[in-house]
Length: 243
Image 1: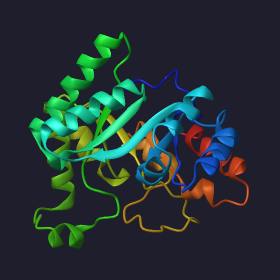
Image 2 (image 1 turned 120 degrees about the horizontal axis):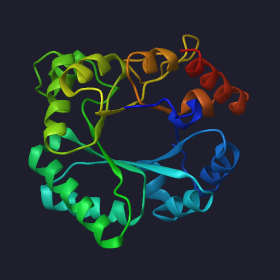
Image 3 (image 1 turned 135 degrees about the vertical axis):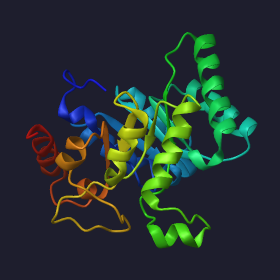
Image 4 (image 1 turned 180 degrees about the horizontal axis):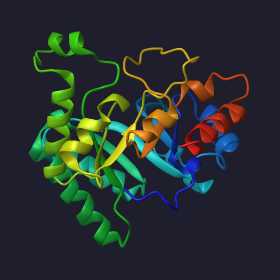
C-alpha cells in the first residue's frame, strides 16, 4: 500500500471493547479527532446493535465492524450485504470459513454496494487469532507451524478476492512474501515494551509493526487503560512518526 500521504493517526484503529453504549459514546467523543477508525466488536455490537455504528458515523468517523463472520457461504454473504448497507469502512470474516465463503461474501458486498451507489467496505480475513500460539493450534487439530498456516490462509483469502487480513505483527513478513505489497494488513497485538501483554501472545510496538509492513494498527487496552488516554495516543503517533 502507498501511505506517503496518510497521516500516522489515520493508521490507528481504536478497539471500542466496552459493554455499554454510553461508554462507547464517551470514547468516540474523546478520540474522534485523534485516530482513524473505531472498531466495533462482538461485545458492543451484541449490546447496542447498529445504533452504535450510526453514532460513530454521526461523529464523522469510520467504523471497522469486527464480528469475524464464520458460517456457511450463503449466511456470511447475507451478513456481508448487511454490513455494506451500514456503510462501514471495514468488516471481517474468518479465513478458516473457506474459499467459497470468502468469495461469495466479496461478491455479495460488491453487488449491494453497486446497487446502493455506495463504496464497498474493505473486507478482511482473520487468519489465526493473536491469542493463539503453536500449542493452541495443535489443540484444535492444526499441526503445521503457525507462520506457515498464517501464510497459507492469507494467500487463500487473496485468491478469494478479500482485500487483506487481520494478522499478528510477527506474521507480516510471510504475508508480504506470499501476497505482495498491495494486500492490506491490519494488525492487533500492539504493545509498548512497558505495556502488559494481557491475552496477546504475539506482539510488537507500533513502530516495529509499521516498519515490517502493517498498514493499520488495532489498539485498545494500551489507550483505554492509560492514565491519560490522549497522551497515550500521542505517544503512539510519535512512535509511528519516528520511522
